[in-house]
Image 1 (tube, chains in turn green, blue, cyan):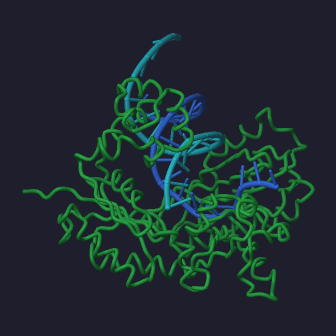
Image 2 (cartoon, rainbow, N blue to C red; image 1 turned 45 degrees about the vertical axis):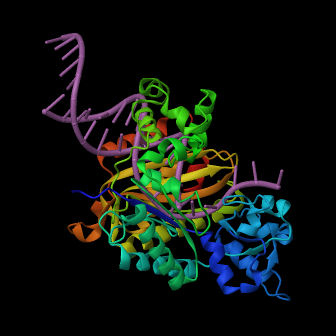
Length: 422
DNA sequence: TCTGGGGTCCTAGGACCC
DNA sequence: TCTGGGGTCCTAGGACCC
């Protein structure tokens, strides 16, 4: 008889912050927030107050550092900091208001990577089918692993949780359920350091009372739209006619909503996947203008292209599509991209094509972010040797499209800042 | 006092081809 | 000559996630 499908979702508790608490045990129990990992901001943090332990800076002192780190966000907050309403992705300045005494630490990416590898390798020694969902999160297929069926998966979950804590000194939360959708929700039931088991028959009792927002894939927009339709909980969503949801949200999304509300999800645990795109982007310390800050922007742009080329080379990929992204001072985002005839991983080529993309965007408003993206990737060893010249010739179609874009009415002929800049 | 950086997937329209 | 339908590629934007 085929065993029941048991899928686990595991995520590390307050990962970035917990790593720092291991290093500085004297901070245990205190509100601590971790910065957003902007290199300039981290350097400023470390340099700010050499008289004290330079890393222990209360967030209240952040306004003094505003010129350097004012645009930072929080990656993780300790549970003590969360008591004050501080959470991930919150701006540093807002955190400073909510809890002025909270200690701010910069992200130590080397440490994060080290612990990430450690907890994943610990899992793999016990359960081979693991899907990577980021530095601090995985799905695990328990179905055929010894202990994976005992007590609905609790026995194996306990074993893995214990092994991770022994290997890393950190805690994690685990949910085990018939599929990824329910496992992800279950892992949130008992944080931190918890285990939750969900069975198919728990749908009505444990899942339907939750708000729709708890579904992985329903974000703020969909949640708001559901609310305007009078649908708050997953149970209310399940009660809707599929055709109603399809009429409101479109064929794919509407049908999907109905399925997940009934706890149905047959996505497999995927142990490896090919990247779809790679990108580099940066938010400037102050908003920049295409004309007035031409030199600074140009240097940043070239740097991003160089880094992207290095990323491609390091990971062994070449790209056929090069694109750019920018964010205006009003937070609106614009993107442009261009597909080449061949593949490239060359920094100069990337810079040139990205520069042409930039020329197709109106640059009248100030910018706060610039990014460069490589897509339509291919493993570079799969590619036959193509001469560099050929790789960046635009296809006729791409060239036509670029020309059409240049002729577009929103573009100010000849006087576009893009022309002056590039 | 706002709001990082790196991703994935979906939609929709137009070009182009059969 | 007119008309239509399907399939694929390309581009832009947006929602969502970690």
